[in-house]
Image (tube, rainbow, N blue to C red; front, side):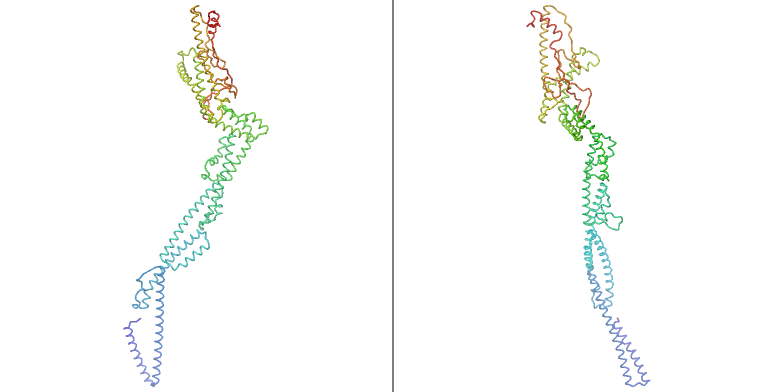
Length: 608
């Protein structure tokens, strides 16, 4: 718009032009000869036309001014709205400048850049909100399982809040997005953990993994990356239920396989299956020895594996039925060997003859008979363990008795002091034997005490090859005491005989004595003394079950050194062959001869 000075100059210039044109028009009218009335009329028309033109221009200017006012007001309102929406508070903005200092066009020109800048900020802010909204909607859909109702509510709430584009609101959305992202990450990790566990269980059970997880949700086993993994509550619950279902199946199959393998082990042991045949199922037998939760080998609990082991059990069961009698006889023989080594009487109800007769008659199931024998074997093993301490003491006692036998034979050897080969070794052994023999009474007493304690604890008698051990030991002590008394009587009689012989020689003179026999040998190889230093007997039992004290038995040892069941030492049995006690010769040949001579004399002290 023109300033006031310019406007006045222009008005003066216009008036000058108009006056010149009016004078020129009047000159023309004079020359034409127009009347005054016509001149006034034409001047009036000219004035009217000029007023119309001015009026039109004024109206146009007024309309332009109104539009500018409207534009300025609209843009100011838009600025205010944008600043409010964006949360911008700028007191130095052009809209706050004094309105009288600038024209409408200047104001409009001054506000327009601010509006453009605010519009750009709004577009950027809207893009930020749009991106965050899209992410929130996507994650919310994944968490909710793409629930249509929830998605509509979320979109509506975001649309209504587009007028609030402040940084505070943006931060709220970002915080909400981060919360959802964390929840998504936690759920995704949980889903992946569940899926991995399902994969492991399916591998162990030999079940199709893809089909199993697809029953929960198809996205859990996708072949492309277009569909995201479903992490909704329904998916998590479905995976958890599937895992429990697979674990239940694993537990059932594990127990079934364990039972089948137990039967397989039993049949292997009964049938003496070679190790190379057992190795075919080594993988399965190793698994059942571990805990169920540690099983991760693929296919180990599959139906095919269980069927293979079951087929092997069925095959061995058929073979077992055909060889049951042979198995019964074999296990009975093992039972008898174990009883012989442990000196425990076997149960006669399952003897070889009775077992064979029962099986042939069909009155007893061979499996029941075999189980009975197995139970007896286990019972013997348990009892042998409790008898171990006493059996070891019996071994030491019998060893001492053997040393006593050896020393008796050694004492009867007239050449024992010769300097021959091995003489010094026998001398050392004789010294050790004397020390050991002196311990025999204490050994027997301690053995009796230990046996009585054992009997009191177990409430049954300690039988050694069917005879109560305490009776054997008591009889042994009694016989040993009788022998000691017999030796003492013999020594007293020998002294009286020597005294009589000395008296007779002083009267009649010395006479040659007949040669006396040094010793006698029994057919079983044991030496029997002529009475001087007679060997005390060691116990030997008579028939099984006899506990008669007056039939003691001499020990017979096994020649082989042999261990049974890992803890029995070489056992010297109390043999079942009855032998008489070692006879103590009350008089030797010479004594008998002299006694006869002395008794024929009238002054003999032996005369009645």
